[in-house]
Amino acid sequence: MKNKIITFEAQNENVFEVREKPIPAIKLIPKWWKNVPKYSKENKLVLDPGPNLTVKRCAPTLDALGAGYIITLWADLFVERDNSNNFRINWSVQNDVVEFWPDHQLSSFNVPPNFSKPAIKYLHGWNILTPPGWSTMFFHPVGYDDLPIRAISGIVDTDILTTAINCPFFLREDFSGIIPKGTPMVQLLPFKRETWKANYTNPGEKKSSFELEKLRTKIVDSYSSKRAKKEFN
Image (tube, rainbow, N blue to C red; front, side, top):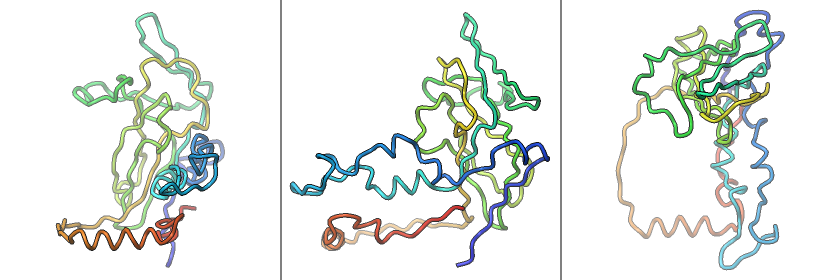
């Protein structure tokens, strides 16, 4: 199968030479995931009555963690707060790293718990280009719920909008200090635009029982050994 090409086009020479390029998400798997043991008991396989596998062996979770690409923070951000908990953001580089989204555009937006307005736009400097008929979904990096930022999700037809897509995020309301260069800021996943129609069936308990029995013929990797390979390079 011929590879689809997603192009990350630097908006200027400074972006290309100074800033980190978007990275395949599979290369930025969170450290906590790497530290999860494969088995829940003595880190070895036990059957009592079923295998004691942990989420580490959950293929759907790994596929989500490694899907698409991640854009990281290209320069340190220093967050300072005053006595009223208002904040300002500074950086040492010459070019702007972030800018603020006008409040009136988010007047009734549902801000995530423990985060606060205003929304901030991350100026990463890359245009994102996909083949005709393909869009890109932008979302908070999977598995990075402990970050002091929370990306706002969105879908862009990146075969049509080929200019800057500055990714908005909220800042955690109690955070002050440095958000370090290299922090995952947003995850993006290209997908083909297609029209879907829902179909509802009732196959009955017998079919479900048969399918479960087939899966149980393998103790480990019953699904992951069959799942389609996903590659993002």
